[in-house]
Image (cartoon, rainbow, N blue to C red; front, side, top):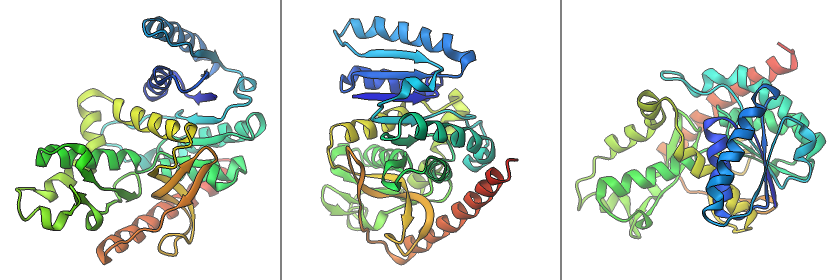
Amino acid sequence: MKVSILGSTGVIGKNVAFTLARADTVDEIVMFARPQSVDKAKGETFDMYDALAAEDIDCELTPTSDFNDIKDSAIVLITAGIPRQEGMNRRDLAIPNAKIVKNYSEQIAIHAPDAIILIATNPVDIMTTVALKYSGFDRKKVIGIGNHLDSLRLKAYFSQFININSSEVHTRVIGEHGDHMVPLLSSTTIGGIPLKYFVKSVDVDVKRLLNRLKNAGNTIISKKGATEYGPSFAISNLISTIITDSHKILTVSTYLDGEIEDVYDVSLGVPVVLSKKGIAMIVPIHMNDYEKNKFHEACLIVKETTDEVLQALDNDW
């Protein structure tokens, strides 16, 4: 199994590569970089080989700037783009990163037409639609990391705030991977007990917890300059789920066609069943009225920005 990473010398790209290599589930990882960054990609592969040797893992690492090398990839991950800086909204990155994703998506369509495209470049919901349009792929094969990371964060925060094993927490975040994320508290359970009943017996400041979730990215960036381990693991988890054909239900960004709340023509985070063919099914979800309103609000905001970005791309700004 072959996975290609476009943007492999960035913080996320190289961490995903190393995590995947250590998992020993892929045969080859293509470390794609711009021509001026190929030497750095080579250095990363040399360093990784040294580490993998200690665990007797045999995974081929291919540093390159040649799109021909992504041929026959099962998955192509796009992490390339301008990273978010402290104080920046993910949508601030929309225009500059869209041109990168457009170019890479067109190249993937030429050199790896059977691949699944996985998008990590921010703003991920908008970039998912950009990749879908310019690759020409079926929408089930263009997937953004979306709210998978947000859902993992929320699970961890509940575990920490309540002091309970994270395996007992079942929760999900949908909508935008950004300010307009929608935590589905109405369907969250702790040890099988609905959250609204559980919080009556323990001291849980849900508002404080949700505020931490919303500001998680900015908090990390302000303290260390970039988010690293969380996104990298979330992406690696998605890739492993696809490769192993696990049929797990995870929350990712996908282009909607009326499956959730009659929302059309926009990519948002929703629960899906993932398989080796991509998205096998968009899972119906129950929301209370507040969550529905917030989801539609996210839809309007993301779609407005997406339309602006697509118009700019079409006009060759």
